[in-house]
Amino acid sequence: MKKLAITLLFSVFLLPLSSVTVIAAGGAGVEHSGANINDTASLQRGAKWYANYCLGCHSLSYMRYNRMAEDLDLTEDMVMENLVFSDAKFAETMDIAMQPEQAMAWFGKTPPDLSLIGRSRGADWLYSYLRGFYRDENGAWNNTMLPNASMPHVLWQVQGIQTPVYRQETDASGFTHEVIDHFELTTPGIQSPAEFEETARDIAAFLDYTGEPAKLKRKGVGVWVILFLAFFTFIAYLLKAEYWRDVH
Image 1 (tube, rainbow, N blue to C red):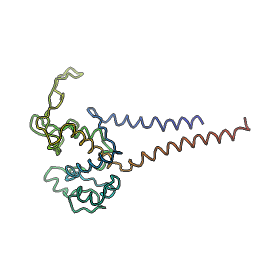
Image 2: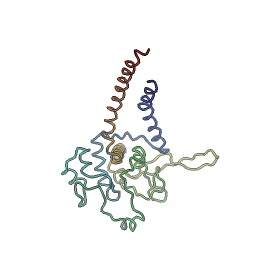
Image 3: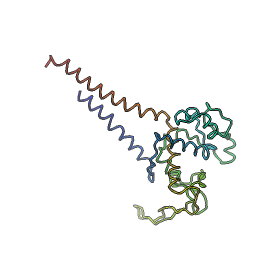
Image 4: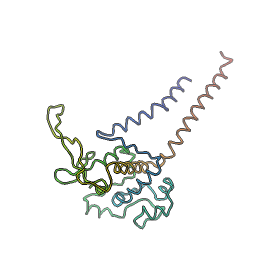
């Protein structure tokens, strides 16, 4: 009985902590996003931003429009009028019209499908990545989370253009080099910094959802599973006590 109780406690308390440890190890400079996939309005806004700024190059080949509409409380008309800019049907996956050979000719490589990026990177990394674009000394786009990324900052009109302010830092070996201390917004965008933070959070939450749509229901079911296990443990203990009463 003690072993069963210990196993139950491990499942309830220790396993969630282990998942937090994995997320926290996602990389230095990762900011907490506050993304919440249970916030339907946030997911709806994230879907809007993604469809308008990202879906032209990055497909979501594991997500169907009708599944997204069901999960995000959207009607078919709302999806087809506001989120579909191709000849795709409501039941089809969220693929792009651009062909791989076109992508190679225009960009030098095919933009990756982002269906599972939220599951592999996490919402916090995506949030930090979207907010980490800046103009470097050569006038090219760069990113703090993914240095020398080939992707341009497609949301620059929304966020504006930020440039880095450097400071000197000495590493453990005694070498001094420049690191980014903070950013200065040199060209304002159509949103304020606080508004763009919310936009980045919404996109990160949407990609977190598309990486595992079942998460919306899985976490809710998980609570009932834990309650059932706790109740079953109590019943098993009473049954064991009844069986062994005459033996003792």
